[in-house]
Length: 240
Image 1 (cartoon, helix red, strand yellow):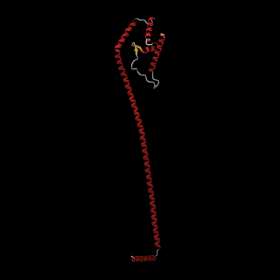
Image 2 (cartoon, one colour):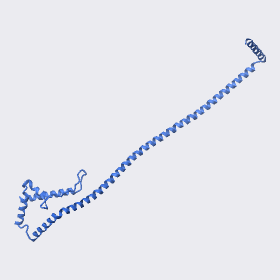
Image 3 (cartoon, one colour):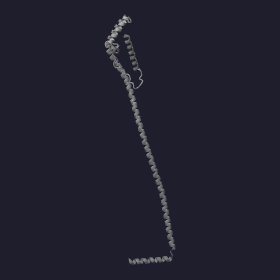
Image 4 (cartoon, helix red, strand yellow):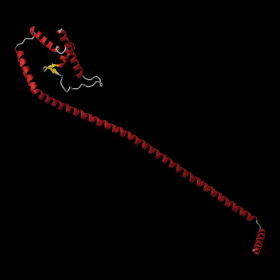
């Protein structure tokens, strides 16, 4: 029975070592949580025996199982002389007692000192990490600003494009007005020429008709018309 328990204990230790090895290896996926350093050490009994070794016996042997196993296994080793109590054993007990006493007296202070050193190292690492995070956040903010500026430049380009189109439209309309003015001047010029030609032709026609009429009147007709005019004036003066 003890041999089977020993084999099971070895298998549990191998599993624990394997699990520790898995935790310390690189994370295969980004979704897996990162391993964290334990703040407090694992609980132990008698100063060096892990508490999980005792809890391994509880489901099958109860609370006294680990102690019975330790006692019977030690008795077996001593009775079969697998482990011989020689002078090194007693020297080891003395050395262990001294180590336990020193650890009892100086252990808390040394642990506090080492914890402070560990905290300092961790703070330095976290400070460098935070600096890198701040730098990356600043870079991200700068990229966002550049993106916003790029969008603003696109808006400015659109405004400039609209301004150029408006200038082209204004130039086009100005050219249309210029063409209209020049064409109107040409048409007015031709209209004036036509009017002048018409007046000159009318004047020449009137003169030609007048000259023709004057040439057709004989001196006798002119004298008779003059006398008739005088009579008409006399009659008008008599009526007045």
